[in-house]
Image (tube, rainbow, N blue to C red; front, side, top):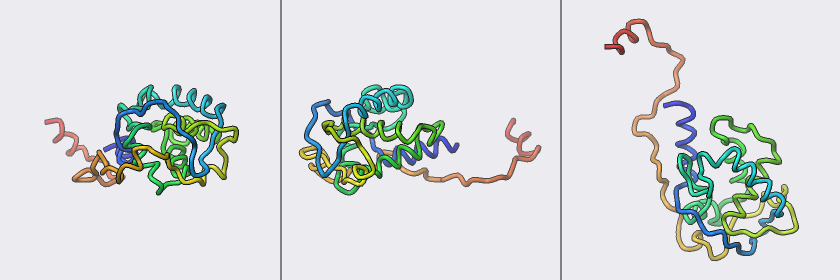
Length: 176
């Protein structure tokens, strides 16, 4: 299993799969805030760096969905701060080049994800205080029940990292 596959497995288990939620906004809650300019800039970042794996509508594909009921049950269930999502995205994405975007791009991207999960933009940009807000969406699927179990299970036989290289005999035997 490659490092990329392992990271995808970890992220997939964290983000869960679901059907994309409609774009109908609801009022922000629990101090979660971002402005329209951040969400618009985040859309551009998403289209350039994320849509290929997460789908143009955030409904998922090779990567898990970033909008919809299961995403909200996991992230907007009152047990996560916006910063938890920001940390996951900024430290693990894009999968091929983690932490390769600027801090501003990651913040804009989170604002876009929030907007696509029903939160409305405000006149206050997402900032350090906003990242500390508990991520909830009144009336969302997150309020309807507990988080779903992860869609992807850990591998039954995890591979251990090693610096051992195959011997010539190993390579010859593998070719048979």
